[in-house]
Length: 267
Length: 312
Image (cartoon, rainbow over all chains, first blue to last red; front, top):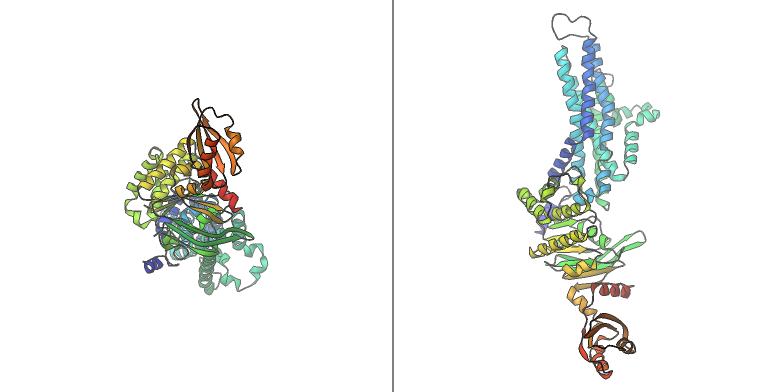
């Protein structure tokens, strides 16, 4: 019996994870904040192809228009950049209180008294917010942009768009896992927001960071630039691989530290 | 096997010693009143039992499963109600219960039926599909008890379950505790309301300054504090109090009731064994018509106050 319990209670097992993840997704689906972000982002990305189409002087023979590569790249980079930066702010806004709010209300302690592990609890929050944010800030707006752009223009570089979307998804996941870990460290939403923004915008806040050339290859803050640059290559190819990889490693390490700290904390 | 067993639990917060060696055994199937003044260490003990806090030293078991080693497993057969229960405001009462039920592998298959059952038990069936953000304090407390029962627990730990309720709500909670006992569920029940404990508990532990200073069956504790006698005489009772107070081993005299025919007083004595023989003799010698002289059943409040005073 004890051996059976030990197996089921192993630190790496995830008792209750599926149920906790279901709760997170259910909560996200009822969140007015996320619905507002979804609407705003979808509307904004839709404007790029619509305005681009409205500016065309000569439509030629068909409904779909052919524009120059530079114009097409500009249109793609426009929405990728907007999702990369505005989207990151939306993700930070929707995850700063992911841990702190439930904890302050006593809901965390209530859940932890059930047969779940602390790892299950934190992972469910991080994965749930990642799925919800990827859908609302990236995938649905990207689908709106793609449908409109393909309907209105010829020769849309869908392969590179897909690559950029992939990088943006890593960015969102990084921010979600980072904010969950920060929520364990700090009990106040304000501090989570300050540290999250400071980490994310470090190269902008501290220009000296940007002068270190190797930072371009490792700093997760460069993910939006990577996503934009993938459309119109301006960075070395190595950085396209190293930045997402380092973001994944750093995100996982920060989250693991958060889980360790959470295991030690009294609730 | 005991429902709860603690051995030498200690825990400090900086220089403050919250638990100073807690030893406790709770029999299976009992309603166990867990008493103590504020800051005695009751909530810290509960937190350690539930794995919400780690003890500095000592061990505890729930139904034979060591809490420190198997945190999640030890909670599979435990339902818990916090002092001020809080639930996700966006969920309805029924959704809260079904969410909790799914967290218990044993209850997963029948969450709908089980939720309906416990909603009826706590009298919340009419509000089950309302968001719990709009529930009153009493309704939240009932929902708290209901969710504690969702996993079909063998043990329920309740932290001040009736402190925020009106008298009707309190009575209902006590009725629910009795039903749980009938169903064979052990109830560990922390409270300040001693009269409630007297009404439902069969075992009691009293904590003070991080230690369990009294533990045992309620009956046993009442008997241990039998330094009080109830004396009934025929009226008139002039001079009775003065005569009793003059006895060197009498600590105090209190009028219990007096009607036209008889008078009853409660006499607190230093030495119960001596008083058993000497008190009737003294009354007869003083020419009072003695109807009865028997050890008075102490109130839990007396036991509690005496325990705290002794420990301090």
